[in-house]
Amino acid sequence: MFAHADTGAVQPAPVRVQRQTVSGVVALIIGLGVLAAIASMPLWASQGLIRDVVELCCYIAVAQMWNLLAGYGGLVSVGQQAFVGVAAYMMFVMAQLWGLNPFVAVVLAMIAPAILAVPTYGLLHRLDGPYFAIGTWVIAEVMRLATSVFGYVNGGAGMSLRVMTGYSADERALGVSLISALMLLLTVGGSYALLRSRYGLALIAIRDNPVAAASQGVNVGRVRFLLWVAAAMGTGLAGATYFLAQLRITPPSAYDPNWANIAIFIVMVGGLGSLEGVLIGALIYFFADRWFGEYGTTYVVVLGLLTLFMALFARGGIWGLICKVVDAPWFPTRRLLLEDKP
Image (cartoon, rainbow, N blue to C red; front, top):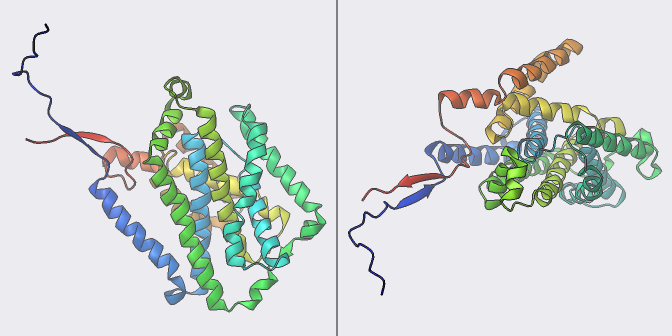
């Protein structure tokens, strides 16, 4: 017979997992207010302000998708403009040529980058580091050249969204505003929900050490593939929204490498691997472009040097510097074990 365990042994104190913070609750309330303000812009904002806010929302969405790829999946792409262009052109085809409601077409256009993402990942997933990055740029250039000679979309001459003349200025403003709010909800809010899920734990493990993550049962290849497809769809939604507001598209503008440059600058300056950093970096780029864009080449050189400086001396970006002073995350994803008081 076995002896009973000593009932007088000290029992460990019960613990609980804390995932939310006061700063996170405050940020959530502010974020919902911002989304409501964006959706209601036609009621209070001028047409010029609406265009600026839509453009800023597109920058945030593209940068956040790149942040997921590079900051968590370890997939550094310089060809995200491929998904911007293919989704934007798909939206123009569905709206202008097929007669579909253009605001519905923006959402449905995400199908095109999702389809493109599958074979491109099949070609690229065996590459690593700079070879992967160069491969993404090559695919974007192939898409640009193919679109330039594709007569169905008017080739290099581009297309105009003439169907939008059937909508009043107020209707266009309302549609674009609602889509912009939805885009932020899906890209930023969706990323936050993903990082707080069990798949988020897998992403963080892959970011820290892919080999160790695989040894613990994480299917690194599968997670990266799903992340690649999701990022393609989010990037495509931003592209379709941006060109819906522009009302015209050409291959050079749709597949402009500047889309990747903007995303890299925003994430590197704001903070790689953080949702907060994307918002900070996007605001910095947006206002810098408005105030100093007229300086042309000099302005671009300064942005490049700033990105290089942050990569060398402040790899956590501006948000990383802030976190060294105060620990108040806007999007808390950590799991803290707290001991319950008796």
